[in-house]
Image 1 (tube, one colour):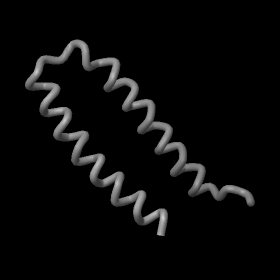
Image 2 (cartoon, rainbow, N blue to C red; image 1 turned 90 degrees about the horizontal axis):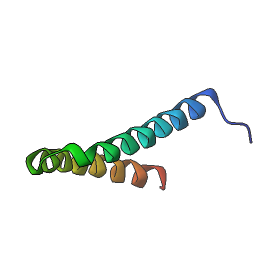
Image 3 (cartoon, rainbow, N blue to C red; image 1 turned 135 degrees about the vertical axis):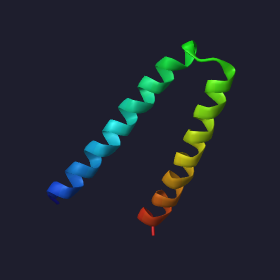
Image 4 (cartoon, helix red, strand yellow; image 1 turned 120 degrees about the horizontal axis):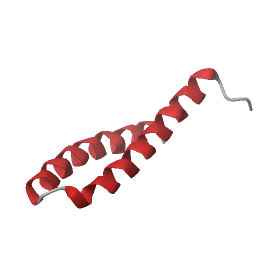
Length: 59
């Protein structure tokens, strides 16, 4: 089965997210506790949205 242009574009978005997460992880060492807490809150919200999307995809 051939991948559509839209699927390839969406997979590229996922690759971009993965790259961004690696960059965030590399930046953790220079952050203070409050910054880390705020970042964790933001990531948690994104994680919730990711879980919702995964559930939709797996239906």
